[in-house]
Image (cartoon, rainbow, N blue to C red):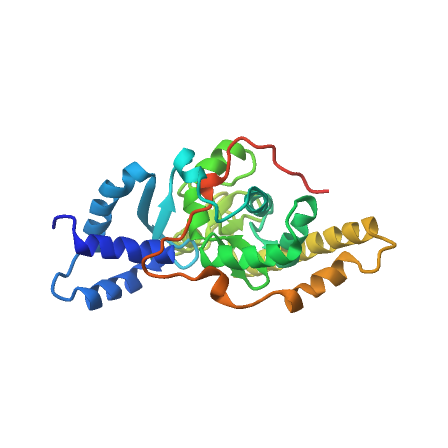
Length: 298
Protein backbone atom coordinates (compact mmCIF):
# COMPACT_ATOMS: atom_id res chain seq x y z
CA UNK A 1 0.00 0.00 0.00
CA UNK A 2 1.45 3.37 -1.00
CA UNK A 3 1.53 6.24 1.51
CA UNK A 4 -1.83 7.98 1.41
CA UNK A 5 -4.97 8.95 3.29
CA UNK A 6 -4.98 5.93 5.61
CA UNK A 7 -1.42 6.65 6.75
CA UNK A 8 -2.13 10.33 7.36
CA UNK A 9 -5.29 9.50 9.30
CA UNK A 10 -3.49 6.91 11.43
CA UNK A 11 -0.58 9.27 12.16
CA UNK A 12 -2.94 12.10 13.20
CA UNK A 13 -4.84 9.72 15.45
CA UNK A 14 -1.75 8.44 17.25
CA UNK A 15 -0.18 11.91 17.49
CA UNK A 16 -3.33 13.46 18.93
CA UNK A 17 -3.61 10.81 21.66
CA UNK A 18 0.06 10.24 22.43
CA UNK A 19 -0.64 6.60 23.31
CA UNK A 20 -3.25 4.17 22.01
CA UNK A 21 -3.71 0.53 22.92
CA UNK A 22 -3.16 -1.75 19.97
CA UNK A 23 -6.72 -3.06 20.18
CA UNK A 24 -8.23 0.45 20.18
CA UNK A 25 -6.07 1.46 17.23
CA UNK A 26 -7.22 -1.60 15.31
CA UNK A 27 -10.87 -0.84 16.08
CA UNK A 28 -10.46 2.75 14.86
CA UNK A 29 -8.95 1.53 11.59
CA UNK A 30 -11.60 -1.14 11.11
CA UNK A 31 -14.41 1.38 11.61
CA UNK A 32 -12.83 4.14 9.52
CA UNK A 33 -11.49 1.99 6.66
CA UNK A 34 -13.50 -1.27 6.72
CA UNK A 35 -12.65 -2.15 3.14
CA UNK A 36 -8.89 -1.56 3.24
CA UNK A 37 -8.07 -3.74 6.29
CA UNK A 38 -4.61 -2.21 6.70
CA UNK A 39 -2.02 -3.89 8.95
CA UNK A 40 -0.91 -1.69 11.85
CA UNK A 41 2.64 -3.02 11.60
CA UNK A 42 2.84 -2.14 7.89
CA UNK A 43 1.30 1.29 8.48
CA UNK A 44 3.78 2.00 11.26
CA UNK A 45 6.76 1.06 9.09
CA UNK A 46 5.65 3.25 6.19
CA UNK A 47 4.77 6.17 8.45
CA UNK A 48 8.13 5.97 10.22
CA UNK A 49 9.95 6.05 6.89
CA UNK A 50 8.15 9.34 6.19
CA UNK A 51 8.43 11.09 9.58
CA UNK A 52 11.94 9.94 10.55
CA UNK A 53 13.57 13.07 9.03
CA UNK A 54 11.43 15.11 11.44
CA UNK A 55 12.89 13.26 14.45
CA UNK A 56 9.57 11.55 15.16
CA UNK A 57 8.44 7.96 15.24
CA UNK A 58 5.58 5.73 16.28
CA UNK A 59 6.52 2.63 18.21
CA UNK A 60 4.69 -0.55 19.15
CA UNK A 61 5.55 -1.37 22.78
CA UNK A 62 4.32 -3.54 25.63
CA UNK A 63 3.23 -2.14 28.97
CA UNK A 64 5.67 -3.24 31.69
CA UNK A 65 2.90 -4.24 34.09
CA UNK A 66 0.05 -5.55 31.97
CA UNK A 67 2.06 -6.62 28.88
CA UNK A 68 -0.70 -5.00 26.83
CA UNK A 69 0.46 -3.87 23.40
CA UNK A 70 0.39 -0.11 22.84
CA UNK A 71 1.29 2.33 20.07
CA UNK A 72 3.25 5.39 21.22
CA UNK A 73 4.03 8.63 19.37
CA UNK A 74 7.58 9.73 20.21
CA UNK A 75 9.88 12.68 19.65
CA UNK A 76 13.49 11.68 19.12
CA UNK A 77 15.24 14.95 18.35
CA UNK A 78 16.59 18.01 20.05
CA UNK A 79 17.50 20.76 17.61
CA UNK A 80 16.77 24.41 16.74
CA UNK A 81 13.43 23.46 15.20
CA UNK A 82 12.14 21.47 18.17
CA UNK A 83 13.42 24.06 20.67
CA UNK A 84 11.02 26.56 19.14
CA UNK A 85 7.95 24.86 20.63
CA UNK A 86 6.71 27.00 23.51
CA UNK A 87 4.01 24.97 25.22
CA UNK A 88 6.21 24.75 28.33
CA UNK A 89 8.50 27.39 29.81
CA UNK A 90 12.11 26.70 30.79
CA UNK A 91 11.09 26.59 34.46
CA UNK A 92 8.30 24.11 33.75
CA UNK A 93 10.67 21.87 31.80
CA UNK A 94 13.11 22.06 34.72
CA UNK A 95 10.28 20.86 36.96
CA UNK A 96 9.60 17.95 34.59
CA UNK A 97 13.27 17.00 34.44
CA UNK A 98 13.47 17.09 38.23
CA UNK A 99 10.39 14.87 38.45
CA UNK A 100 11.98 12.27 36.19
CA UNK A 101 15.19 12.18 38.16
CA UNK A 102 13.48 12.08 41.55
CA UNK A 103 11.22 9.24 40.39
CA UNK A 104 14.18 7.21 39.15
CA UNK A 105 16.18 7.67 42.37
CA UNK A 106 13.55 5.97 44.54
CA UNK A 107 13.57 2.19 44.90
CA UNK A 108 9.88 2.01 44.02
CA UNK A 109 10.37 4.35 41.02
CA UNK A 110 7.40 6.37 42.25
CA UNK A 111 7.00 9.57 44.25
CA UNK A 112 3.97 10.79 46.14
CA UNK A 113 1.85 13.59 44.73
CA UNK A 114 2.69 15.73 47.76
CA UNK A 115 6.41 15.20 47.26
CA UNK A 116 6.05 16.08 43.57
CA UNK A 117 4.39 19.37 44.48
CA UNK A 118 7.05 20.18 47.07
CA UNK A 119 9.76 19.91 44.41
CA UNK A 120 8.79 23.33 43.07
CA UNK A 121 10.00 24.95 46.29
CA UNK A 122 13.42 25.09 44.62
CA UNK A 123 12.06 26.18 41.25
CA UNK A 124 10.28 29.26 39.94
CA UNK A 125 6.99 27.43 39.38
CA UNK A 126 3.91 28.27 41.51
CA UNK A 127 2.33 25.25 43.14
CA UNK A 128 -0.99 25.94 41.46
CA UNK A 129 0.80 25.73 38.10
CA UNK A 130 2.57 22.56 39.25
CA UNK A 131 -0.77 20.86 39.92
CA UNK A 132 -1.97 21.78 36.43
CA UNK A 133 1.28 20.57 34.86
CA UNK A 134 1.06 17.21 36.61
CA UNK A 135 -2.45 16.70 35.22
CA UNK A 136 -1.32 17.76 31.75
CA UNK A 137 1.67 15.41 31.72
CA UNK A 138 -0.57 12.56 32.81
CA UNK A 139 -2.86 13.28 29.85
CA UNK A 140 0.17 13.33 27.59
CA UNK A 141 1.23 9.93 28.97
CA UNK A 142 4.55 11.27 30.24
CA UNK A 143 3.40 10.53 33.78
CA UNK A 144 0.95 8.03 35.20
CA UNK A 145 -0.86 8.35 38.51
CA UNK A 146 -0.86 5.20 40.64
CA UNK A 147 -3.11 5.68 43.65
CA UNK A 148 -1.61 8.90 45.09
CA UNK A 149 1.83 8.42 43.53
CA UNK A 150 3.38 9.45 40.21
CA UNK A 151 5.46 7.16 38.00
CA UNK A 152 6.78 7.62 34.48
CA UNK A 153 4.26 7.02 31.69
CA UNK A 154 4.81 5.17 28.42
CA UNK A 155 5.98 8.22 26.47
CA UNK A 156 8.57 9.19 29.06
CA UNK A 157 9.77 5.60 29.34
CA UNK A 158 10.54 5.40 25.63
CA UNK A 159 11.61 9.00 24.99
CA UNK A 160 13.97 9.34 27.92
CA UNK A 161 15.89 6.06 27.88
CA UNK A 162 18.90 7.66 26.20
CA UNK A 163 18.76 10.64 28.58
CA UNK A 164 18.72 8.37 31.63
CA UNK A 165 21.53 6.14 30.40
CA UNK A 166 23.65 9.18 29.60
CA UNK A 167 22.95 11.27 32.69
CA UNK A 168 22.06 8.76 35.41
CA UNK A 169 23.96 5.53 34.64
CA UNK A 170 24.62 4.81 38.32
CA UNK A 171 20.99 5.30 39.32
CA UNK A 172 18.96 3.35 36.80
CA UNK A 173 18.32 -0.37 37.26
CA UNK A 174 18.35 -2.83 34.38
CA UNK A 175 16.18 -5.92 34.42
CA UNK A 176 18.24 -9.00 35.26
CA UNK A 177 16.39 -10.91 32.53
CA UNK A 178 15.89 -8.61 29.52
CA UNK A 179 18.58 -5.99 30.37
CA UNK A 180 16.20 -3.08 29.67
CA UNK A 181 15.70 -0.24 32.16
CA UNK A 182 13.17 -1.06 34.87
CA UNK A 183 10.49 1.61 35.26
CA UNK A 184 7.90 -0.67 36.83
CA UNK A 185 8.98 -3.74 38.68
CA UNK A 186 10.68 -4.99 41.80
CA UNK A 187 14.10 -5.13 43.39
CA UNK A 188 14.77 -8.57 44.82
CA UNK A 189 14.57 -8.35 48.64
CA UNK A 190 17.59 -10.67 48.94
CA UNK A 191 20.14 -9.56 46.35
CA UNK A 192 18.68 -6.18 45.30
CA UNK A 193 18.69 -6.85 41.55
CA UNK A 194 15.78 -5.38 39.57
CA UNK A 195 13.30 -7.20 37.39
CA UNK A 196 10.29 -6.06 35.34
CA UNK A 197 6.89 -7.15 36.60
CA UNK A 198 6.12 -8.86 33.28
CA UNK A 199 9.54 -10.57 33.16
CA UNK A 200 9.12 -11.81 36.73
CA UNK A 201 5.64 -13.18 35.99
CA UNK A 202 6.91 -15.04 32.93
CA UNK A 203 9.90 -16.44 34.84
CA UNK A 204 7.71 -17.63 37.72
CA UNK A 205 5.78 -19.86 35.32
CA UNK A 206 8.76 -22.22 35.42
CA UNK A 207 8.95 -22.28 39.22
CA UNK A 208 8.88 -20.15 42.39
CA UNK A 209 12.41 -18.73 42.23
CA UNK A 210 13.75 -15.19 41.92
CA UNK A 211 15.46 -14.99 38.51
CA UNK A 212 18.46 -13.02 39.81
CA UNK A 213 19.75 -15.11 42.71
CA UNK A 214 17.47 -18.18 42.43
CA UNK A 215 16.25 -17.69 46.00
CA UNK A 216 12.85 -19.06 46.88
CA UNK A 217 9.99 -16.77 45.84
CA UNK A 218 6.82 -16.12 47.77
CA UNK A 219 3.99 -13.76 46.79
CA UNK A 220 4.10 -12.36 50.34
CA UNK A 221 7.48 -10.87 49.43
CA UNK A 222 5.82 -8.68 46.78
CA UNK A 223 3.22 -7.52 49.29
CA UNK A 224 6.03 -6.54 51.65
CA UNK A 225 7.86 -4.67 48.87
CA UNK A 226 4.67 -2.81 47.95
CA UNK A 227 4.10 -1.79 51.56
CA UNK A 228 7.69 -0.61 51.86
CA UNK A 229 7.29 1.44 48.66
CA UNK A 230 4.23 3.18 50.08
CA UNK A 231 6.03 3.85 53.37
CA UNK A 232 9.02 5.25 51.49
CA UNK A 233 6.98 7.80 49.57
CA UNK A 234 5.01 8.76 52.68
CA UNK A 235 8.26 9.32 54.60
CA UNK A 236 9.70 11.43 51.78
CA UNK A 237 6.59 13.58 51.83
CA UNK A 238 6.66 14.01 55.60
CA UNK A 239 10.35 14.94 55.67
CA UNK A 240 9.99 17.44 52.83
CA UNK A 241 6.90 19.05 54.36
CA UNK A 242 8.52 19.29 57.80
CA UNK A 243 11.67 20.84 56.33
CA UNK A 244 9.68 23.42 54.36
CA UNK A 245 7.46 24.24 57.35
CA UNK A 246 10.52 24.85 59.53
CA UNK A 247 12.00 27.20 56.92
CA UNK A 248 8.79 29.25 56.86
CA UNK A 249 8.24 29.29 60.63
CA UNK A 250 6.68 32.56 61.71
CA UNK A 251 4.61 33.04 58.55
CA UNK A 252 0.83 32.94 58.59
CA UNK A 253 0.49 29.58 56.84
CA UNK A 254 2.71 26.54 56.68
CA UNK A 255 3.59 24.81 53.44
CA UNK A 256 1.22 21.98 54.31
CA UNK A 257 -1.67 24.41 54.69
CA UNK A 258 -0.86 26.00 51.37
CA UNK A 259 -0.75 22.58 49.74
CA UNK A 260 -4.15 21.71 51.22
CA UNK A 261 -5.67 24.78 49.60
CA UNK A 262 -4.37 23.94 46.11
CA UNK A 263 -7.35 21.81 45.18
CA UNK A 264 -9.72 24.68 45.96
CA UNK A 265 -7.87 27.18 43.79
CA UNK A 266 -7.22 24.91 40.79
CA UNK A 267 -9.60 24.67 37.84
CA UNK A 268 -10.32 21.01 37.22
CA UNK A 269 -11.61 21.51 33.69
CA UNK A 270 -9.82 19.81 30.80
CA UNK A 271 -10.19 22.94 28.66
CA UNK A 272 -6.56 23.92 29.27
CA UNK A 273 -5.39 20.91 27.29
CA UNK A 274 -7.79 19.82 24.59
CA UNK A 275 -6.77 16.85 22.47
CA UNK A 276 -8.22 17.01 18.98
CA UNK A 277 -7.70 14.56 16.16
CA UNK A 278 -5.70 16.90 13.96
CA UNK A 279 -3.61 18.48 16.71
CA UNK A 280 -0.49 16.50 17.64
CA UNK A 281 0.50 16.61 21.28
CA UNK A 282 3.77 18.53 21.73
CA UNK A 283 6.59 16.52 23.22
CA UNK A 284 8.53 17.26 26.36
CA UNK A 285 11.88 15.59 25.74
CA UNK A 286 12.50 17.66 22.61
CA UNK A 287 13.41 20.61 24.85
CA UNK A 288 14.88 18.90 27.89
CA UNK A 289 18.60 19.64 27.71
CA UNK A 290 21.35 17.14 28.34
CA UNK A 291 24.21 16.93 30.79
CA UNK A 292 22.71 18.80 33.73
CA UNK A 293 23.71 18.45 37.35
CA UNK A 294 21.04 16.48 39.13
CA UNK A 295 19.37 18.12 42.11
CA UNK A 296 19.89 16.30 45.41
CA UNK A 297 17.38 15.87 48.16
CA UNK A 298 17.85 17.76 51.39
